[in-house]
Image: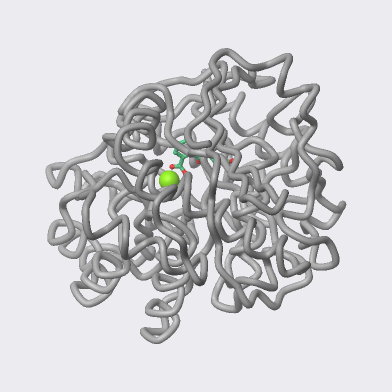
Length: 375
Ligand code: OSB
Ligand code: MG
């Protein structure tokens, strides 16, 4: 069976978050989200989502650079490349476009869903995912005070979340983590994420985090710097996890070989798509390194891809896969994503494609820009 995309719809929506989300490098109140709809000549279609943000504070890519990369280079490439399998597109993109991994992923991911839909099976099945449910962790943004953060953490725990991650930044770290650990007690799985806000000069300071029994410290230093992460890891007992640094399977192998990370965060939208994400999963598994699925404040469309990916066997730690209602007044999919009282999300194995339907009336209400590539 060949996959031939004949039309690519680019649609930007504005989706307000219920609460602002603050990380070390910036705050988001409303998501600008670039959505993609792929259609083939046989009447099949699939929706996907680009994970890029509005500003380049997490990665060099943004909504606008991704739109440009898709419109100018990647979209035309996809439209003129008939493929056997969804996995065939990544090498075609790699051969002529360097970088732009979020833009590549925004086309590659829905191609998997299109293929799965054509075959009448779920995206999770197409990826060979096996889990029926996935443990959910929450990522709490930086709050005004340690007490405010501790209150959020206690509420998250009561809601069932299996792991609580705190965003930290210089000056908003030790006292915040201490207040949360004190409020939650020693048994609750707790981690921190710096989004690259520290430098090697902070090594002594970061080593104080060892006393809180964290399951990991995520991305303390700048993404390019694997060696200094390895040096830091040698000074810490807490495992380091890398997020922004892991852009490909080769980078993941390097990080593992150097000792820069003992845990790997995989976001398919960051690493060029699902084939790359699976390769990172497989190589981490071969090295005995656990992985988990990160999030980028996706709408229910992007969330579907994360849930399907996280059904693979080496996703042994809770993922940032909060339910729709945590982010939005109303999501763009039906049914919305939910979490059980004991902190699990169900993989929609029995539904073809991404497993949720896109609420196109809702999309029409939220759309701020719209364009079609192809026939
Ligand atoms: O580092 O994981 C991150 C959101 C935006 C940019 C970076 C990150 C995040 C999150 C959100 O932590 C997690 C989620 O989607 O719930
Ligand atoms: Mg992170």
